Amino acid sequence: MLRTGCLLRALRFFSSAPCPRHKPSGRLSVRDALRAQHTSGERVKVQGWIRSVRSQKEVLFLHINDGSSLESLQIVADASFDCRELAFGSSVEVQGQLVKSPAKRQNVELKAENITVIGNCDAKAFPIKYKERHPLEYLRQYPHLRCRTNVLGSILRVRSEATAAIHSFFKDRGFVHIHTPVITSNDCEGAGELFQVEASSKIKAPEGNFFDVPTFLTVSGQLHLEVMSGAFAQVFTFGPTFRAENSQSRRHLAEFYMVEAEISFIENLQDLTQIMEDLFKSTAMMVLSNCPEDVELCHKFLAPGKKIRTYAKKQLLNWGADLQTEHEKYLVEHCGNIPVFIINYPLALKPFYMRDNEDGPQHTVAAVDLLVPGVGELFGGSLREERYHFLEQQLARSGLTEAYQWYLELRRFGSVPHGGFGMGFERYLQCILGVDNIKDVIPFPRFTHSCLL
Image (cartoon, rainbow, N blue to C red; front, top):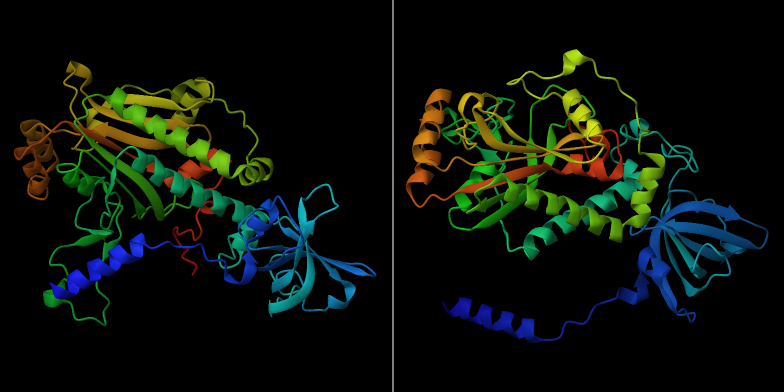
C-alpha cells in the first residue's frame, strides 16, 4: 500500500506539472516544414530519404521525404555538396535555413548549410527505380521496400488516419473499447475455415494440449463483445482476424482487420443500420479532410475504370439462395452505384445467434449487409437472439448446445435486446481509395502460399 500511495502521489504531481512540447534540436518533419507560413531564415534540421537529385553547374537540388506527407521538401545546396552518396533512396540529415521559395509550386525550401549521409543506397541494385511507376503486382514482391513508394506511402497514411477516425467515432459516442482475444476456442462464423493453434514441438505441452481444448486464431470478436455488452451498453473492438481460406482472389486475405461493435437495448434494424451508416460517413469525411492529397493520388492512378458488365437472367436469385459476389455487384449497380443495405435474410443461411423474425413461410432473421461499389459486402450485422428458448432451439438444431452453453447462459442473467455489426477494414480502404486488390491496402499481406517476412 505504501508503494502504491507513493506512485499515485508521483502521478498526480506529473499530471499537474506543465508539459512543454519538446522539439529536439530544431528538428522538423517534412510536413511541418512545408506548412510553415512565416519563414525568416530560422535554422532547422530535417531528416529523411532522397526522392530525387538534380545537379546543375552551381547548385544542387534534392527532394527528401520522411513519410509525413506525400509532398517532398526541396533542398537547395551549393554544388560542392554533390557526391555519389547523394543518390535516390539514401537517408540524409540536412541542416540549414528554411526560406520562402521563389518557385510557384512550393511555399518553402531548405537552403542547406550541411548535408550528412546517414545510410547509402545503391540505386542500381535498389528494386524501386527513380521516376518509374511500378505496378502494384511488382511491388508485392518487395514487402520490405514497397512502403518507400509514393503510392504505398499514401495508402498507409490513409490507413493510419482511418484508424484514428474509427476510434474517434466510437469514443465520441460513448463506446467502450474492448481488447478481444486473438486465441479462442470459439468458431463464431461456423464456417470451419480456422487456423488451429498448437504449441511448438520444442515445448512440452501439458498432457498433449496446452489449453486442454482445441484453440484457434479468431475469426471474429463478436461473441466476446456480446459477453461485454451484458455490462457495457456500447462496446467495440478493432483488431486482426484470421480465415484459412484457400483463395488468392483480390477480395481475400488470411489475416485482416475487423471493426466490430455491439449495442445493448437496440430493438430494430433501422437503429443498427443508422450507426453503420454514420460510422462509414464520419470516417470517410475525416479521411478526405485530413489526407486529400493521398486520396487524390490513389483515385488518379489506382482507381479502376468503370467496367460494363452484363448479367444473364439465370443469375437472378430464387428465395433461399445465398448472395454471391456477382449478385452483390449487380444489386449495387442496379441501384445506381451507391451503397445498398440488404436486410432480412432467410434463417437457413445465417448463424445461430441471429434473431428470428417469426415471419411465417419465408422465415427470416433480422440480419443486414451493406454492399458498396467495387467491393461488394462491406458491413455485416444483425439483431442477436436474446430469447432463451429461441436460442436454445437454434443451438440444438446446429448441434452446438454443449459447446455454447456459456452463450446460452448469458440469456438467463439479465439478457436484453441487442445487436451488432462488423466492418472489414481493408475492404473499407479499397472502397474509399478505389484500390482493386485487397493485398495492396495492408502493410504485410498474408494469403495462401504467401507469408513474406
